[in-house]
Length: 376
Image (cartoon, rainbow, N blue to C red; front, top):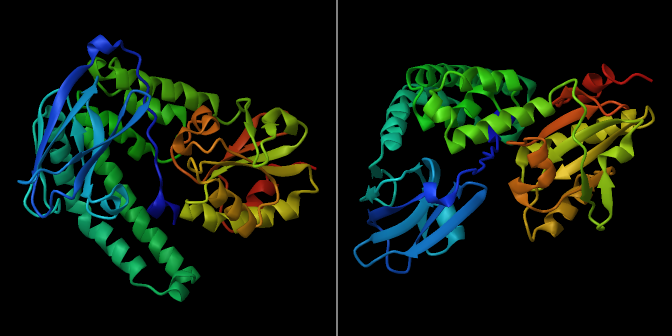
């Protein structure tokens, strides 16, 4: 079920000088809101996560200034507070180095985005993806209309997994075709991650990346993606696991090197991640079954700034007895960035010599999967 709740974080790095960046405008007009509401805009500019807000005008208008190098994905929400806005309808589109207009007459339910080549390409892709909307809707209806008892049955899980696989397969076909037909599009670059899945190998990333035009590959975002491929190579099976040191809940520094001589399941998770919490009982079971065979777990949490208590409560509630570390920087956790983590849960099995020997082992048979690699 993790495919239904995959949390992806895109890593983007900026290498160009600021003179190459241009200032552009986002203009909007929306109905259904008052002057007590705000428009909230979030996007990345190089390594920075930008979160901006403006008050909605009396006629529903708003305006943002932004500075970017390449077209970048943005999210727009509206509400009296950010928390309330995040619970309502959001709009995903591209900021580009041109004036962008967002228009909506029904509180962002059916907005239109005008301006920019990349937004036109995104609209074309959305039209293609709408063809498989019935598969997505059938999956969601089946799952969310079921009782908890039904969801726990093996037959139901198998049916849901099959529906999910059918949808993912058709989705992948559409994206692959779009990428091959649009090599000079930033939409193609951004969709590679979706095609290859949440835990890709470097060769998979590179295969699609090479299909893109030199203009896209040599852009700032293209260079950042190439760096991501290199980082993925560094955490491939057979490589020595990248070294790191991070603090545990008590503030003591824990290093991966401290575990040489043991098998270590390096487990990336967070208290807010539903699939992670669902997987924790499997990890607990495997830990107790194998901890006497030179095996342990090291948890790396992507919990958010100011949410340490949530992290500690999850450790206690889920009975996670092994070492835990975090810098409480959410997706900017330094260890997560080192291991190119774009979704959780995700894990790496490291042997006593520090070599990565397996990745993303999970499920009710986790103990059995681990046992295949652990030699007494």
